[in-house]
Image 1 (cartoon, helix red, strand yellow):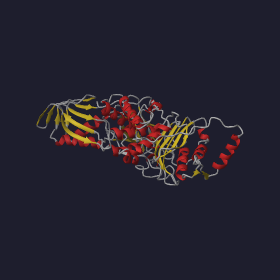
Image 2 (spheres, rainbow, N blue to C red):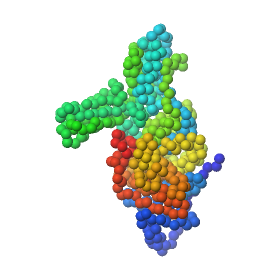
Image 3 (tube, one colour):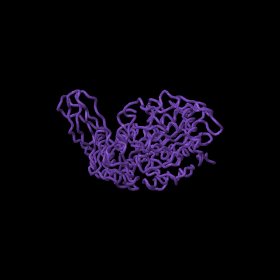
Image 4 (cartoon, helix red, strand yellow):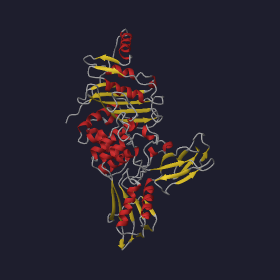
Length: 535
């Protein structure tokens, strides 16, 4: 099957000096009135002049922009600005990861978590070991481990003379991605990756616990601190104080490096709302084993031996209980809508295991790269070092994102994948995701579907939008090396301009200088990484 080709216009090599002042004046006349409509010539729909104008925004001074727009039906390039430049894409990296997962694993792919036994049964006594075997499920909740324990209890086992052994060997022992920032270690969007883990909520923030701190009854009292799920796997070091009402809140919650001690410090005023923080654990395999062990105890199953981690399950182990995850096509939604880094990395290692027998980043990334080449993406022009885009070593040109967005439209799983993309201005966070507060009251609202990306000095937005004439467009915008707190309104202006235009005329929408949105919108990380504040 032939693939649509991005065709970039080459700029003219020479322009007579006397033409420049006239050209600049003409461009300003045509584009700076707001809104402005530009008539189309045979080879210029007006998109070029409009987007070029938007990219003159002072917030991009000294920065870099890689932008490509294409006709989704024909693959024809309608606009390109340094489309081949390799820039840091942040969470736009999830586009190749998610597409490769759908193609290589399949939309019906599911993870299994099993409880298995070795040794022999003697009535309610198992004289052997109990194994908890994970395959990488990043959506396993405490209630799922509780149900596994209930199944073990229903099998008639009340006492296990041996050990509880957590088998996470489907993945390797490298827990953190390449060049992930050390100061993100306790932040929930940078959790350790294991084939056995626990998510504390239905956002499926695997490898984390939720710490809730409420003010004490009176000034001087310690705050009331609880954990979700309740677990002794982490220790609380509470050094915070309740202060009089009206005083500023300065509460911080952070896990100490290399430990599972979570320190709560600062002040919380009397009568203030409880503070919630999602905090990573050290060694998620042990976390899963601890949650499962507590559930066994709650169901009347006593394990006499110690807990051991990271040992493979013997081939002759007998199954006792199984939990099966949601299918991949459903997992895509929390993954992509909320830009879940841990899902991206678990899927990357799963691709490695399923395609090469190795649950490693290197094997998974090789699988992703092989898939991209088959789809016509020039992998020689990019570097991908993790699945999520958390690493600042990722470099992907906008032109290659556009190629991928064009190519996947013919895939049998495309409809499910397309539905996983955030939708502009849809207030339901399970639909709008990281775009739920953007491009509202514009033609792009409830129209544009795209993956966002944000790190300090790096922003991206790549996806699909339908123009005013009903034509579907593919776009990729990657902006880097700016010093402004946010350039999201520049991205929004480009997409809204596309949504406002037709084949024969282009309506320039200028970027807002200051976006009226919640404080969580203009941040240095992904919108949904700022828990619990909404976008």
